[in-house]
Image 1 (spheres, rainbow, N blue to C red):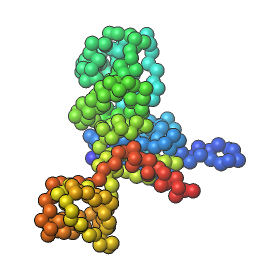
Image 2: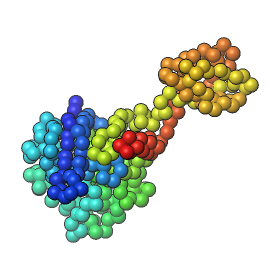
Image 3: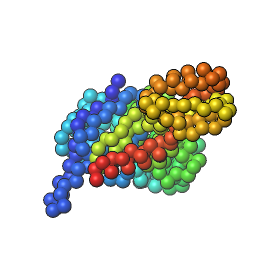
Image 4: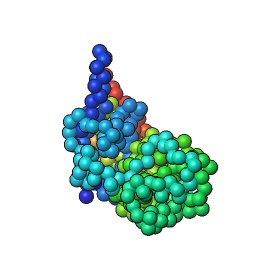
Length: 310
């Protein structure tokens, strides 16, 4: 089920200056599925924050269509099932964590019974049950982010928009917040995650969307974005054998007595390599696609699209 549908979304900021208008989003189309974590990546100025602002009706679209649970953002009902953790949030320091949840719950029109029940559950979910009565000014950055996740969920939303949830958090805090997001997902929630920390996105996201210069240039599963297309690492007892690969099949990148790396024209051509090795009675231990990090994939994608524009 699609909980967010974006079709040909364009957002232009009209500057009135000679240098021209700013195209923040350029014909962006994507869908967010129920129960998934979708990571949104892009360099500074790519349009990530603008996209979140459109979803929350903070800014109006220039053209295209956006639906949240079947409703356009300008319909207030669309936001009743959406929780939001902004980047660099500033919660009132005089409140306790529990006080923040109570205050946010009242803004959503929840009853005192609902607030009490939700607050207890959420403090446990984010690992803050011992700190609910502590003033927010005494919280570490990691604790502040976790209580921020809790307030974003006080209305029991179906969708969470998280803008840089681990920004400025120490390594232990990042791990804790990642675990919280994984627990949130087990409750069937959908998380739309905007982050510049690619390793964090790689560890939690089901799919990743990459924006650059306002355009959606790539979207797919983490595994698809981190696989080297048609490159395979073969571990085998090759010894002194030479495996010849015709040019129309591919090429050998490395070769040793214990294996080799090949790049093929088509993935199915791996069967040709396997047949050649079996004919020579070479024992094959493993064959696996070559992997790169999400950071490498992101860098290559952004660089390719930058060069294409130039």
